[in-house]
Length: 155
Image (cartoon, rainbow, N blue to C red; front, side):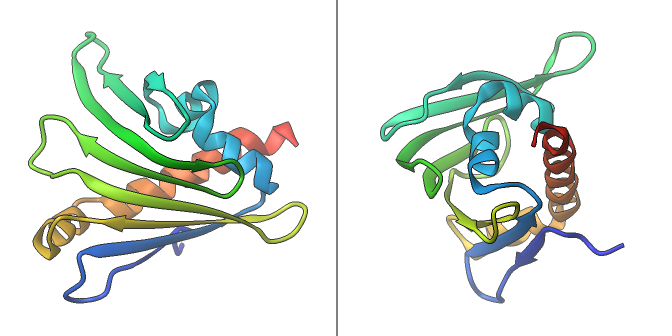
């Protein structure tokens, strides 16, 4: 079964373009990225901080059954335009990956569908390619599928 989340990675470029059309109204899709309770549901991680405004920031954390932190990510929000776009940095702590820059754009398709376009810029082509060696595409597609499933009953 093909992934609904599409990842475009051009050779020699240090960026990715990710697109996904959702069967969700634009306002609801945007809420998925800005309301901590919803973020926790579809990402499966705890939201420690989510300050949605220019110069705001966020921090996510996931622990195993014994309470050991297995994933922590944080970033700074540089631009925040409700129902349109979020520009932010993203950094996974305790990993070999550098900070990346993310441009998220939200576009209304119809009253019941919307498009998410993410452009992610890495420090180097090598770091981008290293990320693509991981099950990144599969994980992102699974997260987006869960996002769609979590919110489907809401509207």
